[in-house]
Length: 167
Image 1 (cartoon, one colour):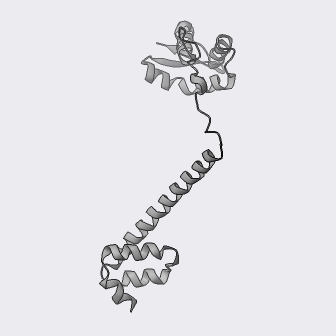
Image 2 (spheres, one colour):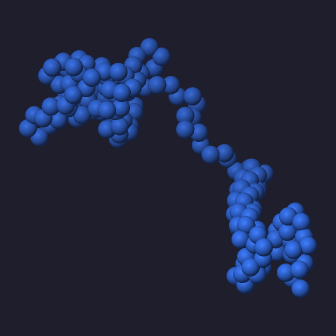
Image 3 (spheres, helix red, strand yellow):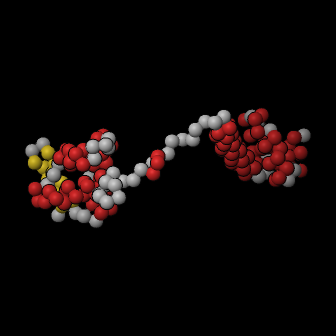
């Protein structure tokens, strides 16, 4: 019966048969295939093929949804940098990160806290979001800025405050 038919099929014919019957294969079918010579390898290829087909179907569905949205006049996703917004300091001055570096370097051995840096950033960039600048400070100090800018930033406790010092 079925086992004899499967043995007579080429790999390509097996693949086509499996693709056509993708949705109706049962655990009993798995047992039948795995009981054949090279059955586990065939079943493994089938599982891989099923995963590939599922991924391809998901991608096709995503593309269809996107195309339908464009056809219906849906706007594209908003861009991260709408209108080509330049760095915070403009073409001539430092941006937020450059300002953080400037404030730390300018503080000398006395050091500066993250709160003090934020106050100075808010004063320098009143049009920028305070929360976003605070997150930038958190991300940059001390390790990332030290690594990316090549400066030695150390910390020193002063009561409840942590001071950032260059040097």
